[in-house]
Image 1 (cartoon, rainbow, N blue to C red):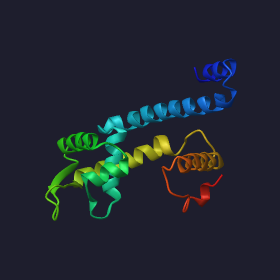
Image 2: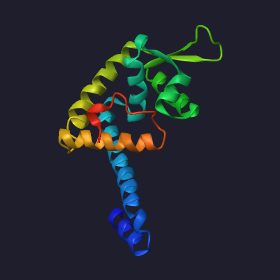
Image 3: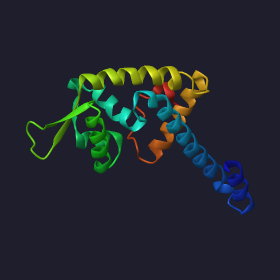
Length: 169
């Protein structure tokens, strides 16, 4: 379907957009494949990649806790989705909610010892079964990261490429 879209754009006189439609649809397909693979890797420990992403923010954050609103901003998801993720993780005993010490309107998510242990296991699984082999060489992975960062910069998703020097295009 992606190659077909490329040819359809060419055939319909949109040559200037044919590479764009091919790149966008290819990236979207890779996202779908990676999301499915990550969920498959994490399924044996009863996690999804979305829940893992929230846990990893707490796991590496000093003190293991953050306000729900801050987690939503970091993960770039709506507050309703954060609430749903927290509900599921709390039901699993992986995090707990606590009142914010200075802001009555805010709630803190705190990773539990069980959450730490499961996050550690999730890191091991993803390292072994996904992150270690993306089907790219190291240089290809660096190039890909650099290209994606360049795209994000052009759409103001990031402010600058400072710190990303190993991945420059």
